[in-house]
Image (cartoon, rainbow, N blue to C red; front, side, top):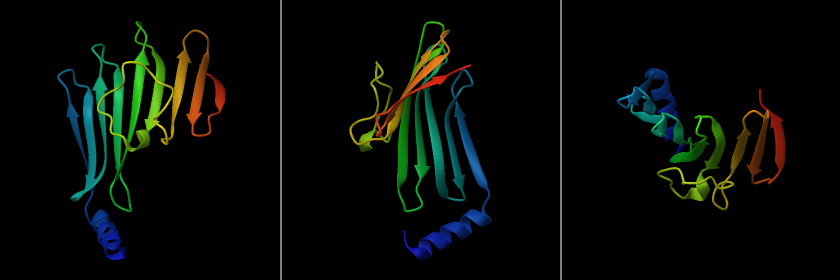
Length: 143
């Protein structure tokens, strides 16, 4: 983006207040939320729910100052009591688009993507977190 375009965008952001548009499904759950300033797209979050109303797949899109968008993905898995048991942040998924959550949780994003994998052990007070790309392991207590 040229310096002239950046100045124009900053001027537009100052002159036009932000606007958030929200779309809901028949159950009243937010399925899409988009924020823009004037005619400039800022960000959006799209959420897919399972039959029990749990958010199982989230796509976040954020406009980048240098142009283009950064799209990231998160998949969530729940037990039969609707408790979150695994959450995988796929990051940008190595630049490969995702349209839904995989059937099973894999340990992280595609090769080259940053992300994390959280395992929630309900009743045991422990959450295991696996981060990429550093490939280190943390145990964190959850209350």
